[in-house]
Image 1 (cartoon, rainbow, N blue to C red):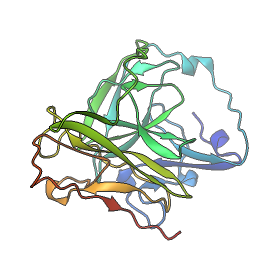
Image 2: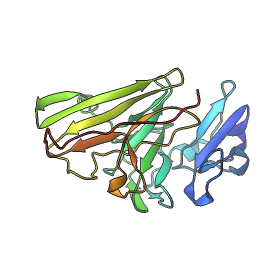
Image 3: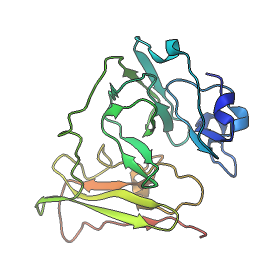
Length: 239
């Protein structure tokens, strides 16, 4: 799609690590350098007013499956979207993050890519994710994730939040699970990139030697009241 109509009355950005960092927007491609809206990518946009976009119906009702390329150059973050006009399954164990404009916070998404929504996903290595064209509708019972729970002293999770006059950072988890390891695993979710000078909290883990060292969750396997200490970091903010 031609990007020009999407720029009218607002701004548009897209994260691309291959372009190299700049002092203001890190790895974001600025609007003047975005000429096309690519299906499978997502974008930040901020508008002064409602913007109406007319699209060709032939571009909306595609039947073929696609391969989504996830890139790892510096940090491994990718801004993605579904190219379909209906929900499809996310065929990966990688965590999906989406921006909630009402909460002004990133929230973990279920294993579904919804139309017209953008997502963040982090990968440790460049990879290819197949996205199949078959519609997928999540069972409502499955869609309710329990954030805070207690089974016993070896199986529990708590959520901690930060609330400021700029934004909220709510989806931060720590605890223990039998499905976790004592090091980095799929339950330890990286903290998504923030826009501008927004405060957030994170669990620092430099010792994991990952390209990401700020995590939104710290879930461990072995419970030990003398050894297990959860460190919490708070990002700097000038306001």
